Length: 252
Image (cartoon, rainbow, N blue to C red; front, side, top):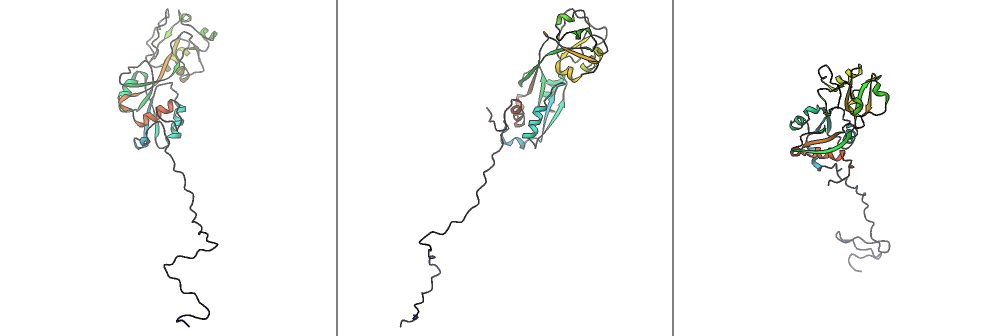
C-alpha cells in the first residue's frame, strides 16, 4: 500500500494557489453586477460662459420710467437663481451718465442717445398719446392728429422725452412742470394737453385724465444699452434673455 494512501481513495488536498474547479458543465461564474452609472449633468448655457456665476452676485439693470422688463426679470430668476437682479430707476436725461458710471451694468433706455462706446439693442417702439382731462372735447374721437391740437394749450414738462413741436399750439402761461407726472396732473385739472409715450401715460394714469392715440405723432424707441468695454458674462446672459434665447441656446 502506498504511503499516505487509503483504501477509500481519498483525494489529495488542493494547493492554495490552485484554480477553483468550474462547475455546471464549464460555465463561467456570474459577473458581479454593477449599479448603472448616472449621466453627468451638463452645465446650462445662458448665452454666457460657464463662469458667469463666478462674478458679481448682483446684476444691476437701470430702467427708465415706463419700461416694463417684468418678463425678462422672471426668466433671469429662473435661469440665474444665484445672481440677484436689481432694478435701478434712472431718468432719461441721466441715462448716458448712468451708463458711464459704476452703478449699473446695463440699462433699458429711451433713444435718441449718444451711442459712442455703447452697444445698443432696439427693443420696441411706443406710440405717442395725447393726455387731457377726462371730459375734454379732444376725447370725442378715437385718434387725434397734430392738426387737431392747433389752438390748444400744449404743456411740455421739463423731463419731456419726445421733443415735439406742435404747429399752432398755444404755449402755457406758466412755467413747465418739473415732471411728466406733474404735467398730467395739470391737464387732468382741465388745463391743456400733454403729449407723451404710451407707457408714461399708463405709468401716471389717473381717473380724471384720458389718453388718445396721436396718429401722426413720433414713435419713441426703447433699447437695451451697455458699455462696449463692460461686456461681462452677466451682461451676455441678460442679452440672451432679451433676445429670446432658450436656456440651452448657444451663442452666435
